[in-house]
Image (cartoon, rainbow, N blue to C red):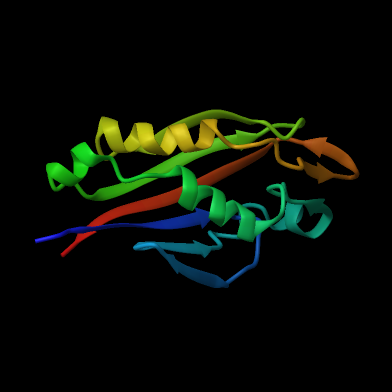
Length: 146
């Protein structure tokens, strides 16, 4: 019996597209992008510019699909779960201070953090025309299906 490894990728970008959810399926991987609670960053949304991945959201999704792999050890052990990643995109567009705020298991957490470490430089967020650091929180669900 072959198992299909899937994961859902929720970018909890609290400063983007309020109420919209976009689902993309590619190669057995389901990725969902949705906005988080916008009340926290409502002021920023009105006057600021959010960080942008090089090439936009579609390129970010492609990057994640190419660089985030379900670890074979987790597949073998039938491990599933949700990782919450927290990190900052600094004033220069670098991903810094990345951590798994909610952990599943070391190998799955490490796969997520490796993906973040490989990210190219982003266009940084701006507030009043000046680059600012922006906090990000992403939810990635790892699920095995038969």
